[in-house]
View 1: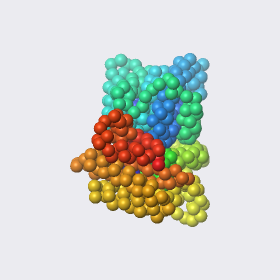
View 2 (view 1 turned 135 degrees about the horizontal axis):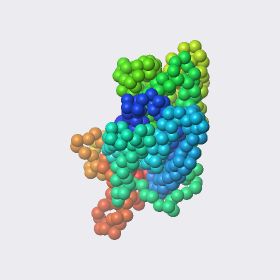
View 3 (view 1 turned 90 degrees about the horizontal axis):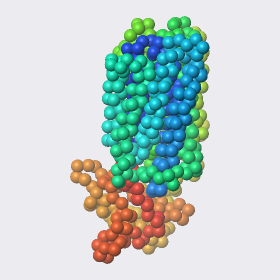
View 4 (view 1 turned 90 degrees about the vertical axis):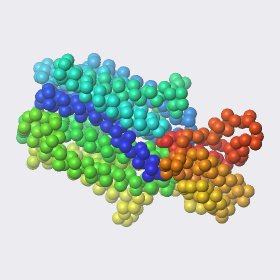
Length: 584
């Protein structure tokens, strides 16, 4: 079931990863084609501010994926709503602060970005200030769009995410065309067009959150300081990751301003590479985001086998997807550069840069996937270290050294060298910890010592048909007796497995789909826990039992029997899966 869920989530996560970058790419194309090199340079000088807001949104999103993912993995509905309510307030606060800063301190911010001097403002300086003002109007939608993605994904509303991204993209294209062809709004209009498209995406997403059966409920009473801290704790590694990129972009702009070609040409070419890189990175980011969500859920469940399967699946998809993206980007580089830039000199520099950049995509995807995975399994120190060396230390060092000898080409080569070196560092850590040269999934998982449940205390099977139900319940009873469990308790647990899974197979399986039921029992520190997870239509046996508690005792006897056996029962539907946890 791990692979099936991974594949179901992957497409929408890749598209979700493009939510911010699609608008940036469209703006870049329109600016480069219609407003000229100076406007393109201004757009590139604005990029660090855009990345700061993307970093803050990514921080909240990552914190949500871990904090809310763990709540949902353990069936804690209140914890999920605490996370939801608190994150909304955090997003609005960040947006308001951003609006105030950009509109009250535009000149110092533009000077800090390297766009020029406020005392002697150039065209580039003025264009940068105008674009930032237009962009910041959309800050609330920009941030909230990023935090809604994990919630909608966890609710299994993948189609809604796809529609939101499509509507946002279409809207941005229309607004950009209107700006350059009709309203002549220049750089302010380009920023405003992106802002309006983010609001379109938000409106589409909100159609889920106003539904009566929405999984997440906002309440001011659920806004808690401790949840702020929890989200921040899990989101800090992502902030470090994104801020490292911000500093790198700033440093690359400085380095390119001093190479042996016109500085505006070099910076404009880098702006093109940065924009197309965001689209290319979306594939690896999609794999990494799915890995973060699933690793957090499996970790809280101490599901070691699923975590190891996840490592194998995520590395496969990270490699294969970015191999395809690398090939396409490399050979399409002249066409891509021509989409963004009219000037031949800038187009030629960008073409070379895109080709060299494309070679870094596979190691970059693997690095990003591993650092997200490590964050999900509470190895956030690894995530922080990988973020800094991958996104700043190694590429900055290579760019500084190589640019002194081969100019702008050295900056493009730095992408490849930096990502490859970072991946080598991760492998060296794994090999040192494993005390051997290893490429095994369990070694790259880097799980804490003592994680999981011993083999003689854990029973895991998958049911694919009605014939499997009785066989697996019998095997479960036999396993429990052999592991020293009381025969009466072993029989009760086996009966629970048979009764629940039989109902799922009989009423939940669909003839046109390959449904399955995962059964996992573990006994750790005397706590007997049975988790049953299926990919059928939504059904909450806990709530169903409450609604029918006064019915005829002869009816619903199976659910009544199971609920009478357990001390605690929790149900939650997440990622399109029914998750039932029973404690005996």
